[in-house]
Amino acid sequence: MAQDDKKVSVLFVCLGNICRSPMAEGVFRHLTRSHPRIGRIDSAGTAAYHSGEPPDSRTMSTLEDNGITDYVHEARKVQPEDFEEFDYVLAMDKDNFRNLKRMKKMALGSGSSSSAARRRAKIADDDEDDGVGARVMMFGDFGGKKKNEEIDDPYYGGRWGFDEAYEQAVRFTNGFLKALENEQ
Image (tube, rainbow, N blue to C red; front, side, top):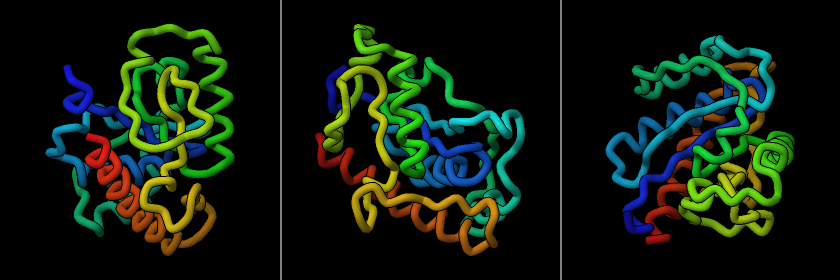
């Protein structure tokens, strides 16, 4: 399949996989439902605090209030194989970004030669990208107000934090899609 015909797979990652990353996944699924370049979409956490649990009720109500009523998810931890199975692993904040870079290095090692790991689209500059496995990036690099814009963890706050996370996920998704289309 030609590079511009390849379906791109995306994994969204936060800490516990019950607030920000499922919000981003739900928004991304909704906005890319019929996009010809989007393949597998999932979300995970860098920690296993909530593995097996559904998203936070405030995440679900925010999605539902914005017309996303068909989203179902069960929290899971990032697995080593995710770095070979996904084209993009998008972190919600800098701490998770650093953890993902470390996890990728441990999962793939510096000399991985997997052909599957090398077959992935490149739609944005990432000076730290090693050309092997998933491209680990900040989701906020796409359509953010500034480079490395973070989606703050709304878990300990009120509903407004979930509304803000939703707005950012919409904006970043649109930026990602624009970058993907510009790559062709």
